[in-house]
Amino acid sequence: MRINRLHTIYFLLGLTLIFLLAFGVQAFRAKSGISISPDRNLVWRDFKQVKTINNRPGVNARTVTYVQPKIGSASEKNGIIRISPKIEIGIDPDQTQVSLGFLSRSDKATKEAVLNHENGHFKIAQLIGKQLLNAIETFEFDKNRYQEQFDSLVQEHYKEWREMERAYDYETTNPRDLERQKEWDNFFEKEISR
Image (cartoon, rainbow, N blue to C red; front, side, top):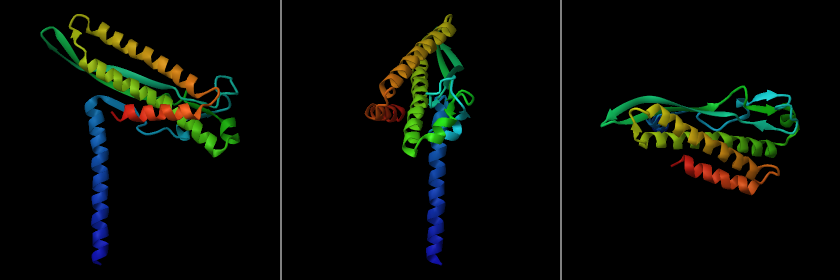
């Protein structure tokens, strides 16, 4: 009987710890102004299954992400505006697609490799969102030009986003380079955890 009580206590303590960790991560993200949807790695359920992607039978899958920055609040001191942004990061559920042919003909290892690659695109959006948040929070905006300066910062980061996307695809696909993919995976892990 005593052992069952101990197991129950340990179980409840474990659940409490999991809850606190999950709440802590969400509280940090809410405080930092970033929301990510879905807040996990992508799975094939997140992809719309289609016959072909952009009428190109050779394309197995694609992930279309978005980074939407908004001015959450602004405060002024001595003509300098500080902005607390809100940044939403996610996937476009209609344009994030997987080919039915790919799913039916590919083995488990190939599907996992392609899914891992597609998750890289989602992680790039998360990195850009994080960099943009930091850039906006530390920038000293002019009270007469803050919207223009905000838009300029966003465009700079969108340009970097496009360049990173191109480099990622170029280095890891056509032909598929698993070693280079691992290097990118390590880069994502390191940068996202900072």
